[in-house]
Length: 167
Image 1 (tube, rainbow, N blue to C red):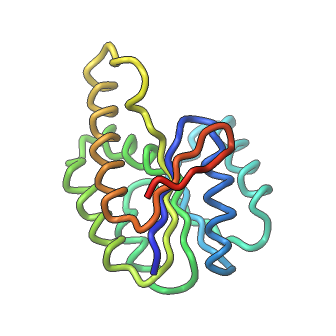
Image 2: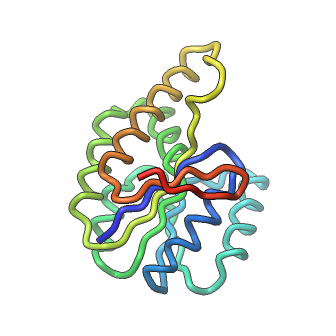
């Protein structure tokens, strides 16, 4: 079992890199989408992602219960989680305990029998946000990314569609 973590800025190419990487573990693969499709723009994004992936994937929409879903899947092929920062936002907006949720996710990754690839945005390289909610998100994302990187076997930084292994 290998945990691979792809991190980079928005629109950096990390999802595409992670998809290719995931299929190296075999197919079919499970794509866990953490988004909630609440408007037409998001629906179009989902369709575009699904068309790019093709038929080697099954898709699950899991905006909150990520640790439970990973446990449920067990060892039924590789798993791609895209993306952790959306998952974090979902919990933040519901006022859930971020540290507890991140801890549960970390534990489910360590105990999983599947090859798992995770995608997240790096948000700490920009300006300091001007409001409390945005600072809470930035801080939570930084903590989460550090925690996930610490339990990952491989970490890839993606910039302009180019991935570099940093762990």
